[in-house]
Image (cartoon, rainbow, N blue to C red; front, side):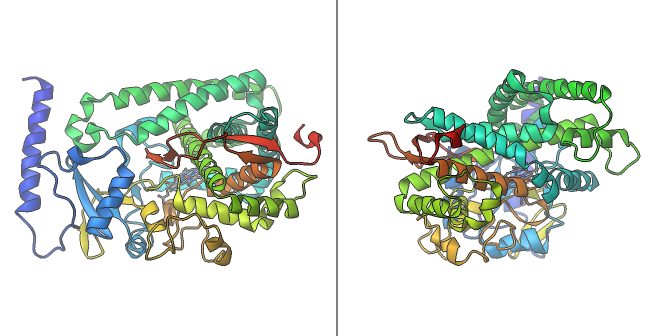
Length: 507
Ligand code: HEM
């Protein structure tokens, strides 16, 4: 019999067993599973999934409350929609829920989960996270790499200046700027000029597609027995992207080694690639890394940093263009704190309280990763009085919590002032379970220190250097599209005019 038919029959039998178990045999001693829509035998809720999963998860939260379950094929998923249950997951039982439930696309993209984001919660993850946070994102490293960010932000401002009066795609500009910053931090000046441009273009094209594919529903994830048939071709497509990235990584690493062998080892500050290659040599150390780990980490950093930052800047600009009063407040603050005869520097950022409130409010309404990255318990546990079986895929509905009318006054309105008055109460640390755009607990976003700096710095520079308006007769389309990242469906196009007093400030 054809292997595929055998696999289908196995799915059928397993599903029937599952259906009987779930609906007819319940163990009276253990709490029940959370409530939720029943779905169909074998398929579960799969046939009812809508195009915008995020909106659908919201509708289900309205119907089933703070915690609900749904079966996608054989896969049990649980969605958490309230701060108190979120606390149970990411604080009270953080170590149990610290595993990820990586889908096939994510495992393929990260060389089998050899990265930080999709790795299981184990000692390797701990070591990699420690290296990343300590070596790349410590405040001294970030301080030392300020000139890299400054050069790239200046480049972006120059580009906008040269397009005065024309339509500028804000998201694309932010994506390119963040990507260049990241590449410079990873491997410094190893690929520069036209070569750097070529690598950047190649990266950009692949990364956007790769991130989109991470969020695509894939039959193989819902019926593991069908995974090897790769019915929708998700794995194959992802392998293609990984090969393209791999070629770039190999090329850069080879050049790097060549460069290092030709010079005496750099003393003091080194870039990330050098740190990792040195660790690779120390095979006995608990921090040692294989080339595969290094590449997987690069995928994480490039994919984790670019789309999230770009989409957040785009939403912030869109909200400000829709709210002229908030735009005027931001620009007045910039005029006062920075001055129209100077460009923004990172040291100005702590003084920009209104801009910080704008960023927080943007990330409340449009968190870039609105369902966080799925967690998964390593053992069966109880949340909110319901059983969450081992290996369930647990989604944290960040956007639902951040728009909950019982927590937030006029939740769908853009009101940065709410963060002005309660500045201390809400930060990005994930300790306040009403507000967690970067996640929470031990798997909170590892790139947070860089993200926070770049978001504020780039946003401040774009808003200080230019007046922005929409093309005549156009309005901002605020509809969103959810993959793994929450994107604007229609890219924001806005028209800049210079605002600073001297043309040479744009040179
Ligand atoms: C607007 C910017 C960003 C947002 C909103 C964001 C959001 C998130 C969220 C929600 C998570 C999951 C946290 C959890 O499970 O609790 C995450 C994880 C992660 N992010 Fe970010 N992120 C951003 C920027 C960045 C940047 C700039 C980098 C790298 C330079 C980065 C690297 C990572 C990594 C490596 C993880 C996995 C952490 C782990 O599993 O231990 N992110 N991010």
